[in-house]
Amino acid sequence: MSVLDEPWIKPELMACCGAREIRDNDRVMVGTGFPTVAANIAKHIQAPSAVMMQESGVYDADPKRPAVSVGDPCLNPGAAMIGGLIEVMGMFLQAGWVDVGFLSGSQVDKYGNINTTVIGDYESPKSRLPGSGGASPIGALVKRVLIIALHDTRRLAEKVDFITTPGYLDGPGAREKWGLPPDTGPQVIVTNKAVMRFDDETKVAYLASYHPDSSVEEIVENTPWDLKVADDVHETEPPTREELRVLRTIIDPARMIKIYERRGYV
Amino acid sequence: MSKVMSMRDAVAEHVHDGDFLFMGGYICRTPFSAVHELIRQGRKDLTITRSNAADDFDMLIGAGVVKRFVSTFLSLGLYGLGRCFRRSIEKGIPHKIELEEYTNLSLPMMLMAGSMGMPFIPVKDMVGTDLMNIRGFMGDGKFKMIDSPFDGSPVMLVPALNPDVAIIHVQQCDENGNAQMWGIGGDCQVGANASGKVIVSCERLVSREVVGKDPSRTIVPDFKVVAVVEEPFGSHPGYTPGFYDVDLNFGYMYQAASNTVEDFQAFLDEWVFGVEDRTAYVNHYIERFGYKQFADLAAAFDYGYPVSYSY
Image (tube, rainbow over all chains, first blue to last red; front, side, top):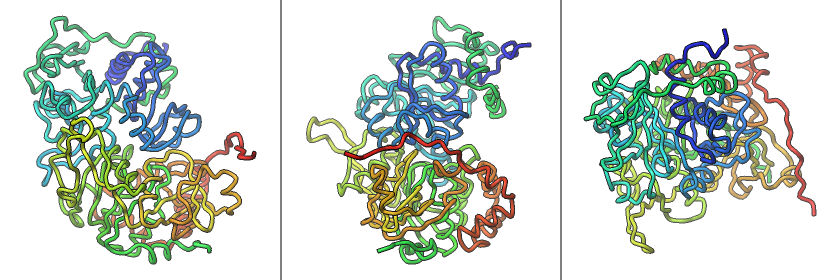
């Protein structure tokens, strides 16, 4: 049996959903894991001229093994440019040159705001999380933010406990009021159950497609805001044979993506 | 005049209780040898900063040497969460550190401003988020919002940072302190140059003549440097490009140890208090894990095209 005949798993579908958001010539800020896999699928299919960068200072790396952090040594040899945070976060991101950023978070709300700071009260938190790192500036300043999240009523929220990274903040006009660049913000939330997009008028995430083993009813039930459903809501297209070929034979022959199943992406 | 000395002397002479320290590194070139020496000498009440802190800052916090942290992030990445950091914030063990939280854009910009002698700098991030609603020990001085004097649009200003001391680890340095680095930079160059004085730890000491063969690689000039420490393997379990790889086994071992106060203390007893310096640390590593595991970390050689500055 060919490796392509094995049934697809949810993390593979999510990576493909992320990949389909990337356009040719996009400049993409990635971390590790899902974002890198998704951007690489896109490069092999519809976006051969997309380029990736890591906030640590790396532009257009050519790693010979999967990078396990944005500072991984395998990102150094072969890159087109290595600088530091001032170059990538300042000269590229803040100056407005980055098209796409991938983000994930412990908590994501209906406006696409992301919390990676605390669960509970800031002064005496139930859980202290790592903090912003590069997420907040990426969420503020790239043109299109792609959000990866687990789909349940704990990870998704009507309102996050703490806005670390700005989505549409408290609704229409808020990003503009704070002086964030025009025409920027979250584009999509890809979860293990669905693809949600943001309404142009209300800036609230709505259901665009449900994954093959899920349903509109299940997703509405597991989404803690009044989830609107697109008129043309449909089943998410499963990974194509070409996407699986790229993913399993070129990008991730060791199938490292399976670790996401253990992290709940099922 | 040579500034070469041991890490013990460098820390004893140049880092004092209550100092504000920039510690370089971004998984790469973490000055771990200095981290261990700060703990061994029992420094207290330090303020520490760097973008994207990891296991080194977690260890300093767990060991109780930190009072304040100008932070953007602290996680052990692949290995897991920063347990000492979480115990400090959630449970006050060994004590609750004070935070001032920024981002991986604003903090490097603040260090850059400091490195250039500027009083403050505008940044485009943080606006509208809850990072504006939390102010720690810097109080009103954390940031200011103004209307741009040029076009009236809202602008966030953040203050320059000027740490008392920077400690960085680089590939090579001459005996006066001209420090040369290559590979992922993080905020190392701006952090070092923002600081009042710099301690350079390096994989190898080289002559001034070698520095002059490729002077574009120098990130800190000798006049800012007060101590040069030749410390091979000095950023282990992090890596130094061209010298050795990340030690994933050791990283996981630290993370597992940091899960409880007792195991964390046992880790310090073995790897920090149980060895007198970096040489003893490396010897202990080889005794404990065997020479093969040590040698396997060594980087391959893959030289670039030699550069020429001739005219």
